[in-house]
Length: 121
Image (cartoon, rainbow, N blue to C red; front, side, top):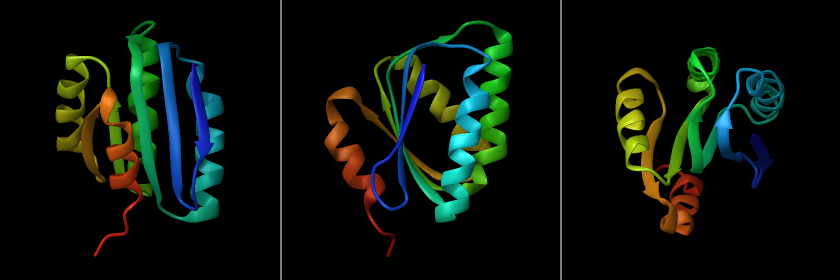
């Protein structure tokens, strides 16, 4: 399941719980596209501390397609992790995608929120 909320002007918090399914991304894409259209580039606070992977390869492919089609519209992303393997996934993604990304452990939610909300100098 994916929950989306617009926390401040251009900060979008996405919380991912459990296991992602392929159809999770159709609804998410519509909501995220509307926020991007409204704000231009957005900042992403991704809470993946309860994320347990993908239901199947189709879900993984839909997730990567979503990231590929939206990464240029994200200024920066703070990723809150709950599993060590998530650090590896983010490390690989950083090679291929545009936004500045920092990883935070689940007990660092406040620091992640503060960092992602900062204005660049």
